[in-house]
Structures are given as structure tokens and as C-alpha cells.
Length: 288
Length: 268
Image (cartoon, rainbow over all chains, first blue to last red; front, side, top):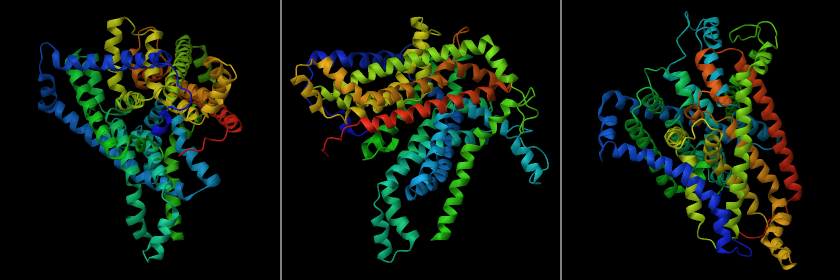
């Protein structure tokens, strides 16, 4: 997604032609994206009169504040665990070639091609009281009785890591692949042991990719809906399940709109800061 | 060094097992002759596939999702290609706005968009309708199609089109006969991508579903939440087969594109 994609070249189109060709794009984005979002957000500050009370309520009420806090903590856990798993995978990919690289890439991309719902169902089977994991742990004598694994925060974190981890691998791999192998060799020639070369040469150069992947997973995890609502406990909601509950059960649109506003503003702010610092490309694993 | 490499390899393969395991475990459960999900599967039966294909509710959802997916693929490729072409051959200056608007649907959480569209469609009478879903999925899939098409379009040498127009072809003819065939593989794979995104989209579908018309992911969500039967693994098997077909088609397209692509213009 280099900016070069969108640079004009060749014989120019007339203004009218450009307008006609761009019109469908701009109208879809304006009508089906910007307008609905803005009119929802306007509910959060204009209902029943200009007010910030709905935002106040989300932050001040301890029940809702706890949901916001839990959402942040779970999203941080998911991103941290994903980073821990994704970095070595990206490192090995950057050091491999041929069939091995193709195999790892295929495994990492496979989840993109399988339904999120199917994978969530798989985790709910694996984590059941009589599921494979409980029976396995009892089988090797790790636990005496089946543990409650399903409908816990742990289940939500594991299943979300499973879905989101591949999104972390790609930007890190993109960053690592662009570091010339000479750099590590130069560090070694200057006498640095491999770990030192890695720490002082490879890691700093890969950092934008690492941060990009981390933020992408973190932001996606914040608003994740399917996994928490199927594998999580209703007593330990995340913001997305709270939004859904406010709309479907309490019909409290202004408050739900305020929650959407908090989520969207937070996510947009972090994205803007990141793209100012590093460029948005890095988040999706693009080459500079 | 080699010991380090050995450890790195072992760790990575353990991670790959974690990635693959749930998918590999759920597939055989489709053939289990039990009313619940059993692993290892007990007995062998195809009745879950039969009950999927015999159920008018599942078939209705499948047809509904397929229609929405196809229409979404059509809309995104037409709108996306037109916009990309206008940017590449326009006077310039719109690029930054365009890119900012494209990033919007990627960054804004789907739950936020879903809730916003739920409200908007209620006000406009579009909730539960085919058009509503197609519009929603078009917004979600459009960025991915645009990036796929733009990648191909930026590789096409504009001199080819200029040459065609110098020989008397109109702009439309030059696009249709010169540029479009060159970018067609990417346009089609963008469309496939859009179809998959729409076909597998659970969040917007969760909020927009009417009582009658539900998409396949929405039906699966209800089934998983209420009573998880081996119909779900049976659908997983079918979806996996579909993915393999789509991936193969994409791979063939890519090969076709590589054979067709002219040398990239030599600029930085």
C-alpha cells in the first residue's frame, strides 16, 4: 500500500470523468460509513439535549468502568501473548526460504481462510468440561477433576490469540525481511555475540513492524465481539458485549452510542498517532 | 548457534500446531454418529451433511449468504476499479483523502459500524434486506479490493494506453482492450476476497439479521450459542472445501497474471 499506488501517471482524464468514476466510491463511504457513524455518535452527545452525561456514566459507574478496564486488560494480554508467539515465527520465516518458508506461510495464512465461527466452535469443544483438554490433563494426572475452562477470560484470550496472532506475524516478518543480512554479519565481525547483535541491531530495526503488529492486534482485540460473546462469561463482559446488551436488551441507544464513541475515538487516536510516527503501511506489513 | 536454531524451530512448530489443531480437530467431528460433538468421533455417518442439505433454514441461509457475497464482490470490484483508475489517471491531489477514507473501515471496529448501520437501516427500512447487507459488506470489503486492484494498476505502463489512444481508440476502448485485461487477474482475486469477507462476516450480520432472512454466519452463531450439534463441523468441512477451491482459483489467477504482466516500468 505504498503511496505510489495512487500517484497519477499517463494521459490525464477530464475532471468530469474523474468525478463520475470516483462518485460511487465516495457516496458509498459517505452514506454507508461516515453518515451512520456520525449520526450514531450524535446520539451520544445530543440525547435528550447537548450533554456529556452518557460518557460520564460509562466512566464513573463502577460496573461500566470495570468493563472498560477489563477490555483494555484482555486486549493487552491478547497482544502480548500474540507477540510472544508471533515474533519467533516471523524470525524463522525471515531466516527460511523455499518449501519451508512456503509451509510456515501457508500455516499462518490458513486461519484467514477458515471461518471465525468455526474456530470459535472448535475452542468451545476443546475447552468443554468433558473436552479434549480437560480429559488430556486428567489423563496425564495433571488435574484430578475437570476444570472450568469455558466461559472464562482465559478461554477468550486463548481463542482471540488464535484468531489474531497471524495478523502480528505479517508486519514483523515484513520488517525483519527488510533488514540486510550484512548487518548481523557486521555485528558478528565486530565481535558481538549473536544475542547482542540481535538485541542491538536486528531488534531496533524490526521495532516499527513489532509496534505496528502489536497495535493492529490490540485495536482489533478491543472491539472484538464474536469470541467474547460465545466463549466469555456474561458476568465478565467486554465493551463489545456491553454495547450489544445495551442495544438489544435495554434499548439504551444514547449510552450504547457513548460506548461506541469511546471505543472509536480511542482506536482512531491510537491509529493517527501511529501513522504519524511510522506510516500506516507498517501496521499491515507493507514494505517501505 | 545450531542449538539456538533447534530451539527456534521447535518453538515455531509448536505455535503452528496451536494454529492448526482446532481446525484439524473439528473437521472429523462432522462424521460422528452422536448428537453432540465427539472427539475422537464415534461411529461414522454422513447424516449431518444430509441434515444440513435437507434443512430449508440452512439452505435458505446458504443461498442468502451466497447472493450477498456475489453482489458484494460485484459492487466492490466495479466501485473499487473505477476509483483506482480515476486516481491513477486523474489530475492527482485526491490520493491522501482517498487513502484516509479507505483506512476508515479497516480501523473502525466492526461492532461500531454494525451498531451504526443497525440504527441507520432501521430508520431507512433497510434492516434485514439484501440491499442492506450488500451495502454494509461493500464498505467492509472495499479497502481490500482497492489495494488488490491498485497494486496491479500501478504496474501497468501508461504508455500502452497512450499508444492505443494515439492509434485512434477512445479512452473507454483503450481501457477495455488494453488496461483491463492486464489488471483482470487482480480484479477477480479482489472479488474473490470480497466474496469470502462477506460470506464469513459475523458481526454486522449479527445486528442486521431480520427474523426471516439470516446469513450463514448468523445461523451458525445461533447454533453454537444454543445447541452445538455436528452440523457445525459439517459446515466447517464444506467451508474448508470451498476455501481450497477459492485458493486454487486464486493461485491459478496469480500464475496467469505473472505470465501476462509486462515488465514493470523502471521508476523508483
